[in-house]
Image (cartoon, rainbow, N blue to C red; front, side, top):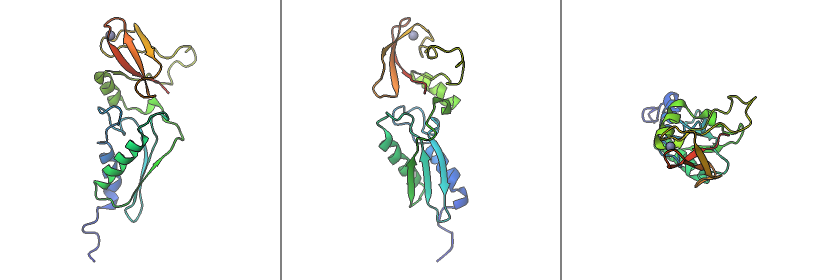
Length: 171
Ligand SMILES: [Zn+2]
């Protein structure tokens, strides 16, 4: 048996896995990837080339868990990896702070109000951070439903431009 010639270089496998996962879209918001959302917490490769991916779902109420799991597994197998284990962990819980800046901008362009950082102003904060209309930046918005199509989002309507939009809950 020739040694190593056709097996993927294990040294480079973790970065290849990360790159592949960066192509996996968020099942709810296709303009951002699961790595943009900060969902992928850990990638490990053992000596045998087996890959383990640990992810934290964005919201425990999201129904897309199995979709994410299958997408991760498919992306890693696409690299020629035979054995993939995908684990989910809720510790520490996912926070909107893990969303990267670039993704926040794409969320806004997509028409979803990005979540406010959870750490800011918490001493004097009595109300949640104000939500702005992603189209006209107006703060004159009303929440129309506590939950959007999924438990992840809230529905708002802008009283300035009269457009409905979805917003994230900051968690
Ligand atoms: Zn507006």
